[in-house]
Image 1 (spheres, rainbow, N blue to C red):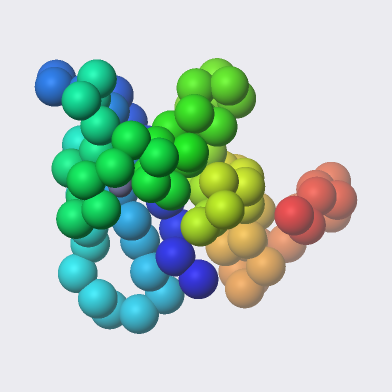
Image 2 (spheres, helix red, strand yellow):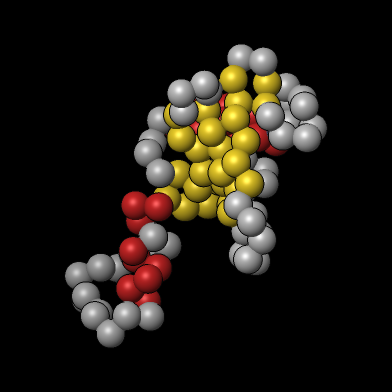
Length: 95
Ligand SMILES: [Zn+2]
């Protein structure tokens, strides 16, 4: 499933698309004129994800194709800990 992350760039917001495959990373820039993706549209999924990102106002959110929050890079350590030998009993959060 594709995953998207946004950061504020110099010329607009940059949205990076990650994938489970080893396909190359796509990065699009969204500014007042729209998105730089091939769709060349003001209403592509990237702009929808940007809108959701602006509403959330939280750092490090990861979105899916439907602009739904699916995680946060700053919480991904809880996932990594599952396979780690370091088990902390105090942590009950398993996303
Ligand atoms: Zn786009």
